[in-house]
Length: 100
Image 1 (cartoon, one colour):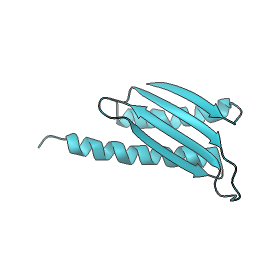
Image 2 (cartoon, helix red, strand yellow):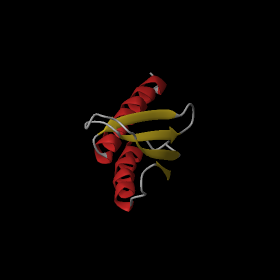
Image 3 (cartoon, rainbow, N blue to C red):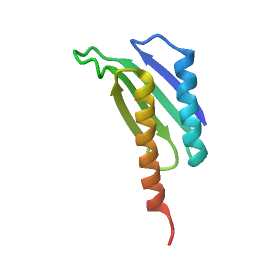
Image 4 (cartoon, helix red, strand yellow):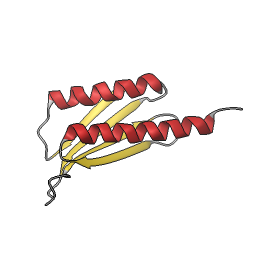
């Protein structure tokens, strides 16, 4: 699986990329039809201390793309929440495709 990182108003971080890669590799181990992941990190101006660090992840696989977005107080929580949402969507999609 290819992983492409994009930063909007955020300094590129190797530590953040390795954290996201670790989470996405676990997801890829469960759902091996994922071809590519586009990970977007964005810093949003907000008055709330609990949000503002946004992580968007778009997965490319056969069929429609899957997308998840999360905004938390740090990027690690945003990545984790986005991956959980993607896993939920992939599981739902896999159940629909299951033959009986």
